[in-house]
Image (tube, rainbow, N blue to C red):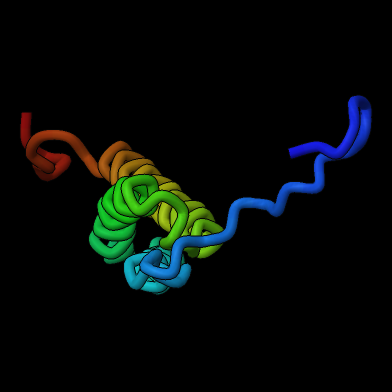
Length: 122
């Protein structure tokens, strides 16, 4: 609705329908953040792979639910932070596994191969 050509519209912006739900933070967003933090903190001890993987799966579900809700579920910042921490935890797990393999290979290379016979045997 305008008053004259070239003037700014005086129409009211779209108001929310009274039956629409209030925006609320997704409960999975907090769980993703907590599991991502736990995965990051325990990543060097190899135990971080479980909570980090669960956090990434929950983040996928939470994003789908937030998209389907039409903007009434919030918490995307918590989801992003939780996902970043979960990926950091998985990287720490990979680093610790690679370090353990390298240490194992170096120790195996220093060990004698085959039987260790006495010097007076042919």
